[in-house]
Image 1 (cartoon, helix red, strand yellow):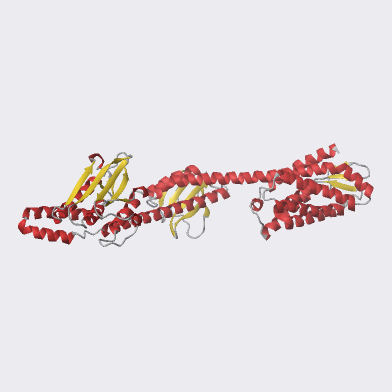
Image 2 (cartoon, rainbow, N blue to C red; image 1 turned 120 degrees about the vertical axis):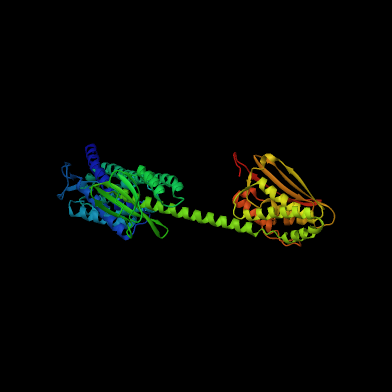
Length: 558
């Protein structure tokens, strides 16, 4: 019995070697990654595992039930002989990975082949092969991930069933009993181990695939992060040169080039560039030119082809599937990066256009009142009228320049506000007092144009609703590494229930809609960040305090 077990384990080594080779076939790799096989894959799986089961039969040991002797190989059996073999391994693997249909069909074919070899256990072993496929299929249905213990149990259990069927079906019974006593335990152990080893080989294939996929993903992510900055301005000679250099470091090729309209944008590596080689319709082409074998794939930006990526290999070098996938993946990556860069540029332009539109919406509605004030002063106070004209010119010039500038400084904003308030204070005949609390050290901080003036204008508008004198306070000081800006008035204030609406949407009131505050709030959030949005508060005495914070980095200035 020990001798038979050692012999079977020796033969098992042959089967393991064959299994290792067979599991490298591409169809097998595709099969083990799928939860459900299609008809074509089932057919291939049945042929594959049946072939393995037949090999397991031929590699078995012929046992003579009368004399108790063994023959090394089993090709044709006498009536007194049976086979101690590893046929069940292929059948069990078929049921574990393909389900009952694949297991049943594999068991039938492997069992039919065993029946043709003869021997007094031919029918019992053939029928047991069919049962082994169904037994293994039960494990397939109950477990999503097959473990080594499961494979061992399925192999050992199937062999136990085969021993039982030999006792039930093989004649004469005494010869069947003697056979089971001699080969039963070695076959149960050997086939259980064989099924576990076969699964171990399969798991090693899966791990190799997963490792290769992880390395490829890592390589792709690395190339993506390194190519993004260079593709933001599109594909040109400079960006193509950098891309080729990055790609060449990541692939096993002699050279890499990017062509565009029969022109070589960039070439890195050894060999001769091929400017006229391009791909129009196919996913890729493989061709030999001179001493090079070239793989080429198109680079698409959306629907438009913007270039061709070429990998150069040694002449006669066999191009692997990995090389093909690398060419297709990298060309697709470059195209996607270009498309993303275009989307980013479009978004930036749209964002800038929206900012300009918001700035343009801030209309100097007080212009007519200002002009009327100046006209009335022309005769009685010509010097003051002249000063107001200068202030008005400064104000309008700032409004016009703000539609083309993205940033300005708090100092310039404050100058704009002072020009505006000079006009308003004259118009209201000095009933308006303005108090400044300004820390000069932070006036270099950058802000979007036309940020302060609309807020100050809103404060003046609402503070001057009542009779008598009124005040506006403007405070600018450093706070938490940034700049805190606040404008307050002594007007009637805003109810707490309505403060949440300010700066978010237009609100109805007798003095206006609040759209200026909405525009300022939106521009601050778009250009500076959500944390820079306007905040509003009113005290019990009335008045409205509008504030915001500008983060300031070291060296920030306009």
